[in-house]
Image (cartoon, rainbow over all chains, first blue to last red; front, side):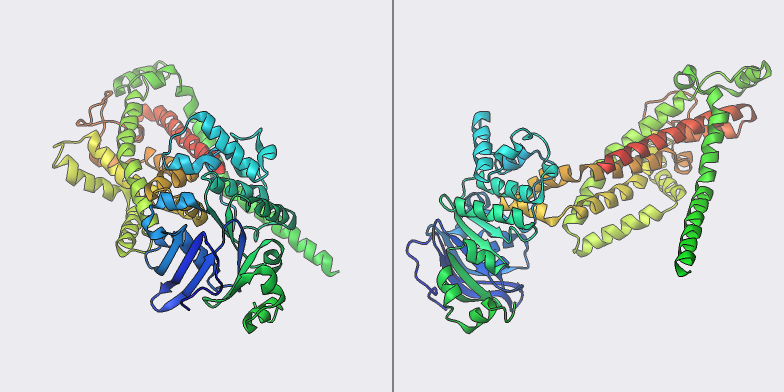
Length: 260
Length: 283
């Protein structure tokens, strides 16, 4: 598959022939090429083990941590090869939110939001820091809930609030792209819908790539969807088209609940 | 009918649990009670500010029906000196090795280090004292010394700190580490500024427990620090310690009363450290 499945003009992320293997000759993703459009929500769906997480973890080079993982292919962010960026440059541009909420337990809410700057030794005036914290927390609709407890540790927050705090931590860098790896799978329905509304709001400023197990969630909030199966990108297109008129039999079977 | 039998069994079991736990804690309570009863009368201001008396003073005082003069200052300072020097080496080294084991859990060399540390933890303390004797007393200080005592205590503390550090770090979810990496934070900073603060209470608990373990050690000190009737802060010279003084008092029929008060002091010190460790661990 040399050409992406569908053409997207001026993509923010361009993935070319990406393969990821955890063991020799065992591919979690095999030769995936796909473009991601700016300021939209792109959902990645598929059954467990289909390579969804591997795909988004390749987008900010999280695989580098594990020397046994081999990545082939190229990824371009705004037409720049991400393998040429430094870790900090890349991760300032592509933020990530994980499956279970993981705020730093030893830090206050304020420090959690500003952690990206603090831990990287990026110095800033106090007023600037305050602004970043306030804007990020407002972006995730957490400001009114925590503004009186900014200097307390975040462990009294609910799971949903903690997850929004983690999104704020990723937003503090004003990234171009936010990657979310099943951000709501550990949350209750009310918190989930809060996160979903938030993502829809955030796409005005950011490009969002969302891995989800939950087809309904993809249908509710995403603009584009891809369906992956056994490491292969089976189908990619506008969410509406993909759900109403899938071209591949496997997509249809997955969407109608025949497997997955 | 069946329900009655079941609840009777339940009650019987509950009763047995209470009885046996009472049986288990009785000796401990008796020891603490006994120590208090016998030791408290010697504990006064001079107990902490004066050095150990000689047997003549003790005998005269006893014959006049007075309490024994003097205290255990030389023991307290000696214990403080040796445990401090041991901590100075064992805490940073133990933390570093613990972090290394956590980071390289799969590597073969790490496995060897872990096994050695486990063997060291099981080694009888007198053997560690012997090793310090041959290494340091014989070859470095050419005589009994606080340094040799500290060395034996260091070897005792190390495996405890190494394992508690590794276990504490292992309990931190890997997602916390990934959160740091996803922010582009360099690896060493994640360890220093994310993992260590997160595991702080566990790490401190491990250190405090290691401290309380060596505070009461006697056997290795007999072969290394020997004892000293005076306050000594020179690590090159023989030094006393509270457990060494207890042993000394035991061998002198006139000093029996001081055994109890010194033991009481040591037990309270260790208990306090343990309680602090528990408080920190609960956080």
